[in-house]
Image 1 (spheres, one colour):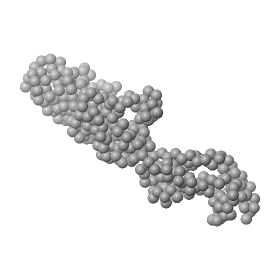
Image 2: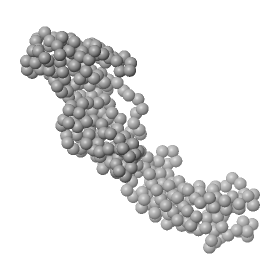
Image 3: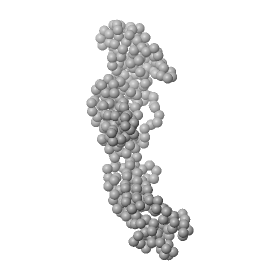
Image 4: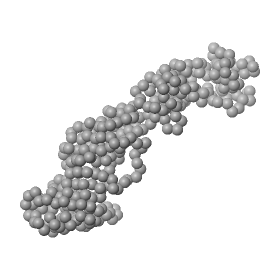
Length: 356
């Protein structure tokens, strides 16, 4: 055969050129320099690299030395061979097939759980890098202790990208609701740089009770793709309700049931209780770069002392509770104006958060 007379090729490299299944084996293949005869060794290294990962589907990619492509291109140009499979395509295909047989997992070209990248240098040394597709979860957290803020500052070094300084969390520490959820999510999944999308917010000294506040969390390069709960600490814990392809890119409307302790500079009367209850069904308007309207659906008011009332309201998410109580001029109506007294929000706790 003309190819064999002019070039020494291994069986696989020969088959790509001439559709020969069993070519004459050469000690030193002109194209791959023995790379295609080391597939078993490469597969063994890949198996070790993917061992920590929980996955069902995979995809193999490779970066080869330019010299390999140049040698095959030169051979094909000289012998006028066109339209054949490349050495890279054959290598990744055969590695994928061997991995599928060895692991019982499937090759998926569209949306693999794990991507395996092979980097091969001109000496034939192979570096293996496995990376998992990000996973997202929907969950609800409760906060049964006061004093923790909801959000954490970004890492000053990487600004959220993940680096050794922040242990690849992307945040400055773990002394917040976000910090606790991120720390637990990384520990449970073995992933990096979790990103949380919040459904509303609460004050540092507020509790989050009932079924908890909804949140979404996206985790990069997770070793584990299943999660049921985040045990937490300092009164914060979370349960996972769904596994998602990604965090939703839209903000759904939601309602929040909030218990507020309102203190006045005078004694409350029965008439004040009636006025507060009349807020049910009303709309609160305020300026936040633009005019925002939030509806109040239900109100329950009970006097707990001469100058304090426990007020429970169910309203659209995003209503600024402290300003609503304190009587900021840009909020209409507000409790201070309604009661014609100076009122303040001593504390407020989240009892329920639900989508409308």
